[in-house]
Length: 159
Figure: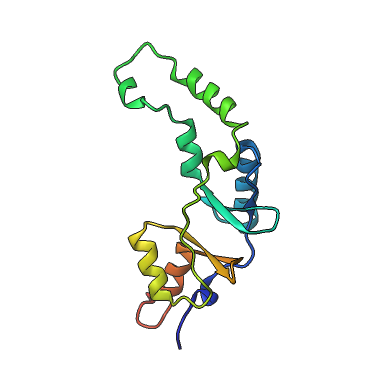
């Protein structure tokens, strides 16, 4: 039996809209984590027609908060880093999702075989891959789901 994305993809997932603020996105991250009972590290971004237009990860949001030249700050003992962090957080709240989202996305179809998914995830250091069918977003494959699916197969399971 060939295992495909259809066998391991999630079809219920949270999405963001490009015009949302980062503050709104953070609320959706929290809601997704609570609802799914696991941490959501990245969310898909869709337009009003539910078409995939991007992806935002926690990394993207943290990158927005991080000062560009922080590597220089390690030597500065007189700097109020806490104050800077508070100011960065305040400024980031109003930044729009479309300004920080990744738009160069790799996607797969529901018929993509599992070993090809593993290969893509490893080569591209991806933790999640959107699943499109006829250009329409129908699911997402998470690396954790692939990992546990494979580890539960005969020969891989631990007893």
